[in-house]
Length: 309
Image 1: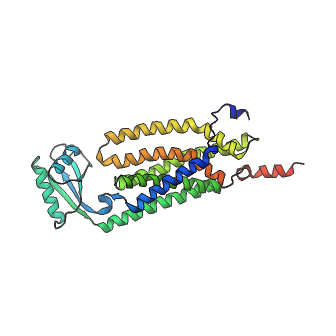
Image 2: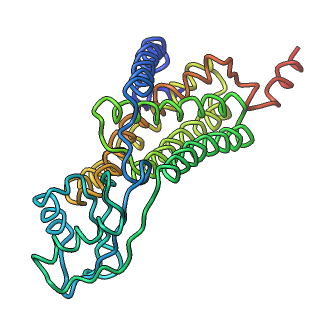
Image 3: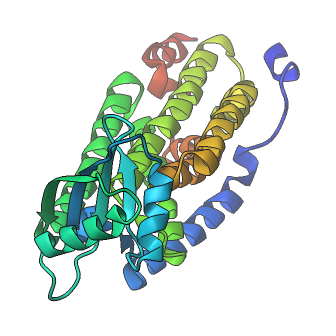
């Protein structure tokens, strides 16, 4: 029991009912906004026209975006690809204007600033393709959660697998709820950020679970709740330091990475905060509620107890 006195003694499991109520309320509110307001899908999902342009000299995509916005092409997404002379422009379709006509309008607008621009390719992405991408994205999240649950159940115990899957599902629901409430544009980059959050949160959860299993072997006396508290306290400094350092990088990416990466970085910022919370307050508490005991992780422990006179 000496190990208990060397660590912080925050009673995380003692407040599990409070944190459970908070998580349920936030999740229900998030689902309410998702189903009532919906998501503000970007061009990746709604469809639009994509233009590939080549400049004669290196150009900043921020300058191109500003030129388009001042000319009436609001909401244009501009990114660089390949060299610094290659620009990719994505625009929402306009009623009564074909993709070729839209491409020529954009080209004429930008040629006012650089007459040597070359329009290399014009592609049209229909709404059907966008719906297919949305379905595939949702399927990717569900498959990832199922695979994670299966992996943790095989590595540790099925209660850990189920509780990890629930806590991981809790994270993207809140992210989507925030995006829905503020109507922040949701595109493929944001979806990639959500998948990254699932992996990040999983890593923190596995660290805690691994310490729980280790402490069941080291600390012979102590209830399951005490072991869970001890394990979370032992990994707390590591969890907070990792989250803070990662958050610093992602915040820098949000402010200096350009508009095209803001959805991705914002989903990571929210996900890191929520993921840290869920790995500390939800994952372990759920396993405890489901009846996790020492015998579940140490099958030989029951045999030893039964053999005692």
